[in-house]
Amino acid sequence: MRQPSLIARRVAAASVSLVVAAGAAACGPKDNDAKGSSGGDATPHKGGTLTILNSNPQQDFDPARLYTSGGGKVPSLVFRTLTTRNRENGAAGAKVVPDLATDTGRPDKDATVWTYTLKEGLKYEDGSPITSADIKYGIERSFAPELSGGAPYLRDWLVGGADYQGPYKDKGGLDSIETPDARTIVFHLNKPEGEFPFLATQTQFAPVPKAKDTGTKYEQHPISSGPYKVVKNENDGERLTLERNTYWSASTDAERKAYPDKIDVRSGLDSSVINQRLSASQGADAAAVTTDTNLGPAELAKVTGDKNLAARVGTGHFGYTNYIAFNPNVKPFDDIRVRQAISYAIDRSSVVNAAGGSSLAEAATTFLPNQKSFGYTPYDLFPAGKTGDPAKAKELLAQAGFKNGLTVTLTHSNSKDFETSPEIATAIQDALKKAGITVKLQGLEENDYSDKIHNAKTEPGFFLAHWGADWPSGGPFLAPIFDGRQIVKDGANFNTGFLNDKSVNDEIDAINKLTDLDQAAKRWGALDKKIGEQALTVPLFHPVYKRLYGKDVRNIVISDWDGVLDPSQVAVK
Image (tube, rainbow, N blue to C red; front, side, top):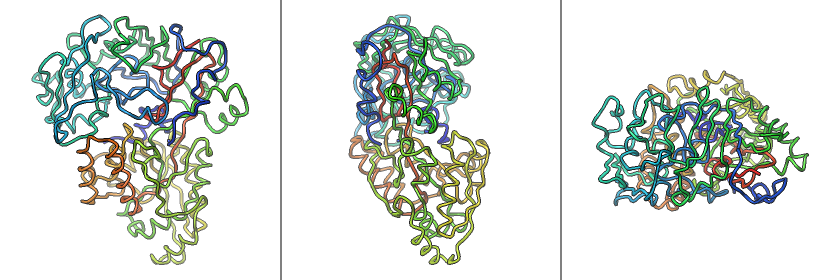
C-alpha cells in the first residue's frame, strides 16, 4: 500500500503530508477568527500576493504524480477534482463535497458502479471546456509508469486497473471508465467501495486535456482547472509562481475563495528558518503562511510567551496515530500476556512530554484518531492511568513465565521526522523498567528503519510506528494495518501484526459496502475496539499541529481533514 510516514508528509506535509504528523475542532475560535488577527481591517478582500513558505519541495507538480487528497494545499489551487473536502474549520471540514461534479456521486445498489455529472460552464485556463473525457484521460495517464507517485487505490479498485499501463502504451484506455457524453463519467469497480467519493478528491481525478499532455514535462505548465494557473515552475517545484486563472468562475466553485491575485510558493526551506521568518513577519513575510511546518517545543514556548505571536498560531488535527507495534511471530511477543503487560506499563504522560508536551500531542488509547469522522469510539482496554500500571504488568509477565522480568529490543528511527522517536523510545524504556522489563534501544537511520519494519522477513518484534489516513475515515486507517489480505510477504508490508482474522476481514468488506458514511463510521469504531483486544499495538498519542502565519494574513481555515491551513481561503491585507 504505502509508507505511513510518507503519507503523513504528503498529506499534510504535515505530516510534520506527510509528516509528523490529531481530535477535536481543528482550530478554536481564537485561532481562526479573522478579527483576532493583528493589524488594520480584518475583513477578507481580494488582491495582493500570498507567500507560502514550506519545507517540502513541491516536486512533480503533475496531478498524476501528486499524492494529495481533499484539497487544502497548493495543488488544490490549480487542480480541481470531481469531489473535494468541505472548506470549513474543524470537524465540518472532514466532509466530502462536490467540486467539478454536481454531487458526491451516485452509486448503484452494491456500490460497485459510481456515476458523476459535471457542472455546466467549467473551463480551463485557456477558456476551453472541461469534459468528462478529460477526467477519464487524467486518470488513465496516472497509470503510466513514468508518471508514478500518486495514490495506489485506482489500480486496486478499477476493473482492469491492475494490468493497465497508461495511455502511452495502451491506446485502448480503461473500459471501466465510461464517458457516454461530455458531462457524464461512470466508474466500474472490482468490489463495493462506499467511500469512492473520498477517493474522487485525489488529484488523479483532475482533468487533463489530451491535446495538451506533454508527458513528464507536463508539470512545468499543467493546464489549470482551478482559480490559479502556473506561470513559472523553478527547480522542480522549489519555487512556484501562481496567478489568477481568469476563466475560473466562483459560480461553479463554492469551496475556493481565491482572494489573492498572486501566490508565491517557496519550498525546500529549513523549518527553523520558516518559523523565524513568520515570527518576524517583515516585508513579504507579513503576508505569508506555511502548509507543512510545525512549531517545535522550544519555538512554541517562545511564541506562547508573546501575546502578539500567540494570536498568530493556527491549531490543526490530522488523522494520525503514533503507536508501538508488535510482531507476534517473534518471541516473546507471541504471548498476548507479554503484549498486554507492555500496554499496562506504558507511561503516556512521559511519552506525551517526549513528543513536545500536551500542546503538541494528545495521549491515545484507541488506534483510530479521536475524531468523529473516523468512527472514534473511546475505549481503554488496558487502563494504565496517566503514568502506567507496573504492578499489573508484572502480574501478567509472571503468568507468561517471566516472573523475574525479561529483556527486549525496541527498534525506532533516529530521524526527527519520526516524531522525535529517540526521545519517545527513551520514555518507553524508562516506563517499562519499572515493570521489570529491560529495553535495549536500536536506533536506525530513516531509510534503514523503514526498510526493516516494512519487510515481512526483517520486521522486528517490538518497534515504534505511526499511520496517517488518506482521508478522514476508519477505512484507510484500519484496513492497511489489519486486513489479512493486505499482508505482503515480498514487498512493503504494513500489516505489522500479521493479523489475518476472517471476522475482521469480513467486517471490513461489509463496511466498505456502506454508502451511509455515518453508519460506516460507527462500525469502524466498533471494529477498532475488537481489534484492540488482541493487543497487537499500543496506541501512544495523536500529534497536534501548531503553525504560525504572517501578521497580514486573514481568514484562517484549518479543517480536521488534514490539519493544514487552507491557502484557498486565505486573504492578505
